[in-house]
Image (cartoon, rainbow, N blue to C red; front, side, top):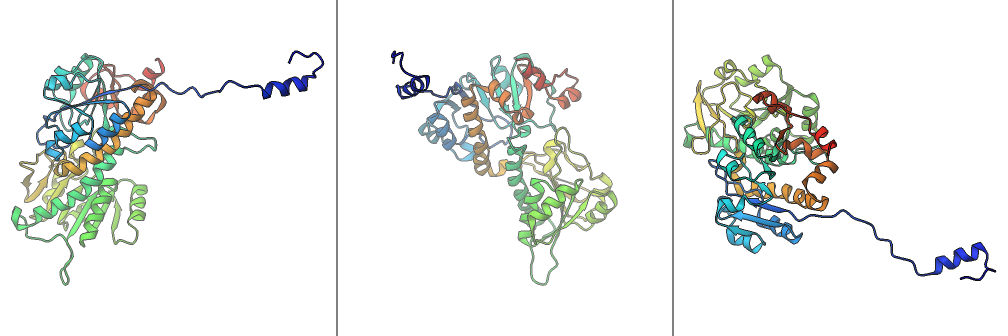
Length: 407
């Protein structure tokens, strides 16, 4: 190698042939995360956010999962299932709130916030139909980072939880309507379906999104006559294309035409959804009063305030009330009626998110590298970042992107 007679090209060649150091890619430093799943205390919330199979996946990545005893019982998942999947079963609510990340289905109560530690991360739903101002202030006082998973977007710009729960709620809404049309539930004694020689019942669906599409599929499959209204021509076109050759009437929301169709409807499904804030109320009290006696309203939009002027929040024990002879079903968490199925659907969304958070090195890095999920963040280290909540409750707010850029 030190022979002065070697040419430059020969020196280069000999260097190439010498043993070289292996060049390895420097990857991100992953983090192990500690997840706590408390038992739901909200009335009639039967879902659980992570099922045993998802817990097994997370623990295989080295993450720690604590779950309060009987948290999955109402969705027919037993403590033994979670224990065998690698979760730690705890019998004190105080213990489960020692985790770094708390995930639950219902919004937190004031009692649950008292158990939380400063700087924790909270994943939960947010319902604007309930008073949430005091909850936000209490979370802010503890410097909590809070994420509303019903406003959470994936990398394709879709709200995965809304989509998944919407598929369940849309199909279930038609089954609910069928129940309240029957004599068993003091209905008109109508069958939701087509029978030879008998005209089909008429169903009006307000909203051409995921809920509306799945409600339409279920209703058409049973043989009902379906009319769909929406304030977006593009959504109506997409739904029409998705349904293929199925016979369906579509129309933009025009008050006169909508009012006319409601007078002959046997069932009306409220399936409008606002990108943020309250659902627009498009069905007036007068329009409801003109509907047929014994007809049924299922307001799936009630978790965002409802799209009927006569809607009032109900629950699974007392799910309906009558006004102007029209049965109103206004339960916010329809998916909780089928808690086992809904829990699996939620778990399929949350488990990959937590795996990505771990791979990115923590929630902050995950949010920096993935802008779409930021839509769900409404508190960041105690600072309100949601404009709608700020204006609704009179709380100062800041733009999350600016806060992240300052990190």
